[in-house]
Length: 212
Image (cartoon, rainbow, N blue to C red; front, side, top):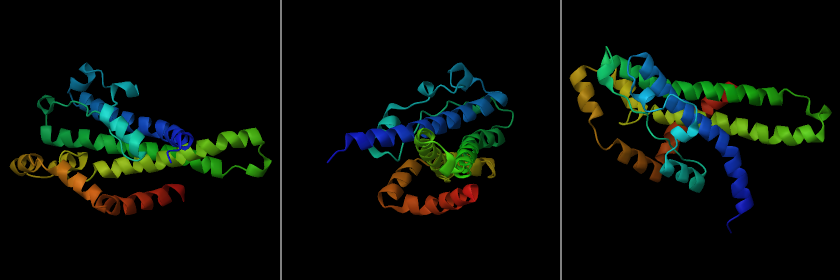
């Protein structure tokens, strides 16, 4: 049976980490593009930490339904503004996963801080605050690591493909980024259960590393 109370609890734990993850990811793309001379994201109002500017209706609905998968609207980037389009696009693409890794580290610090407390000498009221905070922090570590390494997959249009293209000869990079079926491959990997098998070991490794 559909447990509305449990669903609300799960979404309340997911909401803050998810919104922070997608907002900082997309804002980081736009900010680095702006630093490199591209005003497109700034002119579109995307250099902001307001999640409403980045939310994608379908991506948000997917999160509500699955409590696992969600996405934001991609930040617009115009490489024609860059002095070195191939290199600068690589830096812009790297900014999103880097922002998620930084958030994962910050959430891990919060979680480790809670673990370090002497819980036996803490009041029941404080414990009721610390328990959901720990759950949110743990979820924040996992979500940000997942978003980081998922986007680093070298399949167009994911960030990893643009990062890899930065190391390829220009013509080869253009042909590589023109591949139109990357998203189809991602869906197939997810349906076949292979996507989790690919990125879960990396997520688990960094999760243990951050909390060690």
